[in-house]
Image (cartoon, rainbow, N blue to C red; front, side):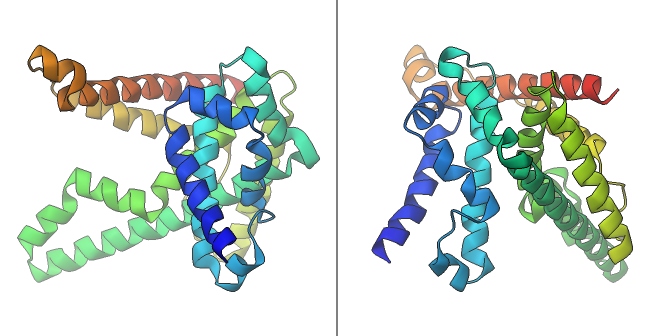
Length: 271
């Protein structure tokens, strides 16, 4: 039990270590980390004790793995040294692209979860409007509050999985095998959902992945425009809080540019 607890802590530590850190991502690949994190997507890396405890802890491990892999994709896509990007891409190609198919399944799951969240938000707004609770309604309708509710309600991991699927499809563009497999999986998933309850508002396809990426980039762009540049004395701007804020802003800008470029690349593939 202690070993399993340590393993859970380790994957969380890895998530924060690789976050926006290319060197740590490369080191993670060098020490063979890919063979441990990818099985967590398919459930093979989840020990029996976690399965016995229910879906909660299993989901936490799975979502941590999603975050790690999304970071690897965003940080290593252009890393030619030691073939980091190709080694990462091969994980999606191997074993009949089972990990890519699992990512599509996760995308569908979080898409449905986000739909339910949006329906709940709309129902709550209508209730508050009927009751005349103007202050509560105004607070709920605040764009940032809505965005936070949607992040918690499926959007965060929907964006992460969209990034992963885009990486596999864009960097396998020479053969387009990943794009074809992902499109086929989305088609089957849409058919199943329509037969089940017809609940989805939009037919699921790679175009939905593209829209998620575009909306993600647009949100970051709007955030950049709203924020004022941080200024301060020289000591603060270099080593203090202000300096760290500027570093974070620069990282966000670079990530937004990456999302925009990948959106354009995916658009070309889907033509």
